[in-house]
Amino acid sequence: MSATLIDGKALAAQVRAEVAAGVRALQKERGITPGLAAMRVGDDPASAIYVRNKIKACAEAGILSWEHVMPTSTTQAELVARLRALNADRAVHGILVQLPLPKHLDTNAALAAVATEKDADGLLPPSQGRLLAGLPGPRPCTPAGVMRLLDHAGVKLAGAHAVVLGRSNIVGKPMAVLLLERDCTVTIAHSKTRDLATVVASADVVVAAVGRAELVKGAWIKPGAAVIDVGMNRLASGKLLGDVEFAAAAERASCITPVPGGVGPMTVAMLLANTLELARGQTEN
Ligand code: NAP
Image (cartoon, rainbow, N blue to C red; front, side, top):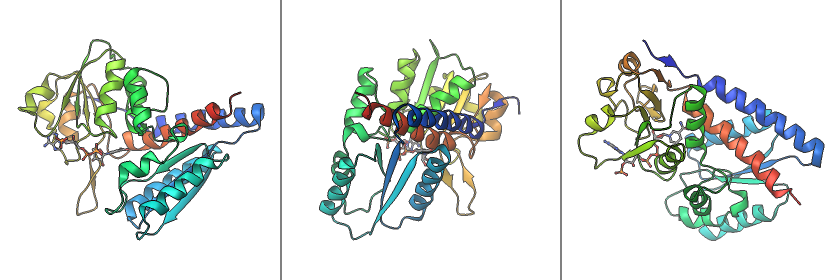
């Protein structure tokens, strides 16, 4: 392997330590402890693990956190009522709704019930609009974490051709905007893109967020490119694979993130950073 490995676990630990210091400062200066409420509906086991990890990370950073679990049978009105109660709770500075919600619930309508100033995930339309307009606000955690990883690895972004694979609201679209903000020339590829291999081969920076194990072949990677693998694909064997054919890509890339241990830990760290920022914002005046 000739690429440098970008250690997301180590960088996430650094970000979390920075957040913990920020929490202590906010407590000392204004007597405020940031608080995050996580809403989980139903019994999806992966969601339960994700929320547990987020709650644990909050505790380690000194952020108060509450997990609200509602049964699968929850109605839209009941969920909205609980979210509105969290909006009104002054101890809660950030709210996250763990997705996916059970199928009978309207995800967009549920998210719309969360107060904009408590959008810990940065995924609500007002936050996404602020990102697009270049205004401050919470940024979606996974793309924000990718930007920290690229900066940490010293990747030169201005003028670079960045190819983002995937166009979801959670990863691909905000990722493209953040790269554009940093003066990359950005291409967004998706399932209808023709000749993906040629598109990827022209990239100085590849961010893969597709959800297909090893879709991006190592041979497609331009020598010297930076490769960020957002994909988390659990095989029947239990093994976790990224969207990039890691070993072959690492022979050509200048730097690359592993799966696991790359983007995943950064997503949680950026959630904590967002929660601290929201608490700072809500306690001003
Ligand atoms: P998603 O909503 O399913 O979006 C996947 C995107 O990939 C879509 O835009 C889709 O195109 C595109 N795509 C699918 N097949 C393709 C193909 N053969 N060629 C090119 N593009 C293709 O997924 P997501 O929520 O963005 O997540 C993507 C991956 O990242 C998943 O593995 C997920 O588990 C992982 N993830 C990781 C983290 C983390 O913290 N590490 C956080 C979030 C997500 P169309 O739009 O045309 O359908």
